[in-house]
Figure (cartoon, rainbow, N blue to C red):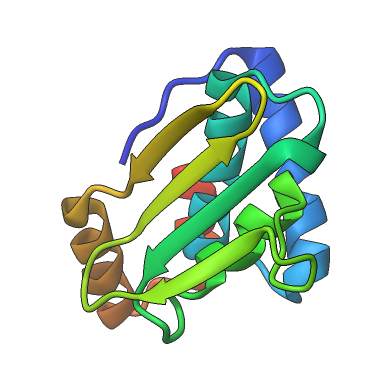
Length: 137
């Protein structure tokens, strides 16, 4: 699991992760994945105001996978409550489609299934949530 970040991007990412951890209640790898998804979407879509952003997440609706949702909500302000985040159940895949109105742009981000399997294996071997979360940063 390797992701490339500049020093400045990494500092910003760590601040976003801490904010998401406060919302979520604890730190874990799927929360970090959600934060990364939200940050990548905002950067690629050049989001300046989150009021125009919408997201549809397709994920397995069980923990730890559903933790991705809190990372997305924390970074994008697309939430279930403001109805800017729609959720669909998935058996395996984790994908999020973002839609930005004016200009009308869409972006679909998926999590590599190999990363999910690797995380599940490390959990079964006794790795902690925090340990795995910081490996994803």
